[in-house]
Image: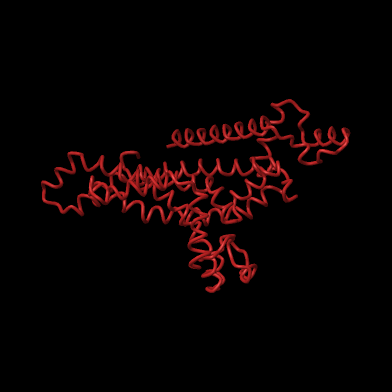
Length: 334
């Protein structure tokens, strides 16, 4: 057990160091001068050299990398040029909005994608299977910004079924105290159901747009896993014994795809956390994707690199969680 823990800890440390190294290299090769981002292009040469020394950019690369790792481990990503605040404070402010959006989208993808994938596999080569494949194709092929804009045009501008861009209407802004940063949860904690209804009307459309892509990925993988399992000999043996189709599918095949399905769902969640840039931009959602976009457009490399490290750390955490769930779901891995 100690050897396994040591190996797991070493793997995590090496992965984090690799993530920091790649992020550091990206920050040095992009055609953006961090000094000019701080002092402006019209600053005198003397100010440029002083700022360069203050940022430590006059040091050798290995010294700069050591300082970068030390600060990143302690959560010090520098000061954002965009907001003039520490990047870590900005990330704490915007990240809960992205977690809320991605979590609801993943929930939609799981609740719809897994059953649809199972039915498509059981009814292989029927109209249900073809419908599932068409939905998966649409989810993977249609640009997210186009679906978002069409959704706003139809469901917000024409029908008025959902709220517009942003997390809340102007009349409900700053009414509910910020406790977790996730507006739905904060409304529930405060007991303000009117604000909760308004927040839900605003989040349902962007979450559905993201959920379509999660649904497509989860449905396609579930269908593939189930088709493979339903062709196994143990499934044939279970049917010969007289078990109902429900018990064969749900009690045998589904249990055996649970392990790879956990990985699919975890990766889908990670992709939504870092891939919601266009969705947040279209819906003016004040989350991590919107923050990264603004930081990149303003040449705020501290904000970009800080957000990149956070996203990478999330993927590492999700992979670790998947490994733990493997052991809980499949006794053979213990």
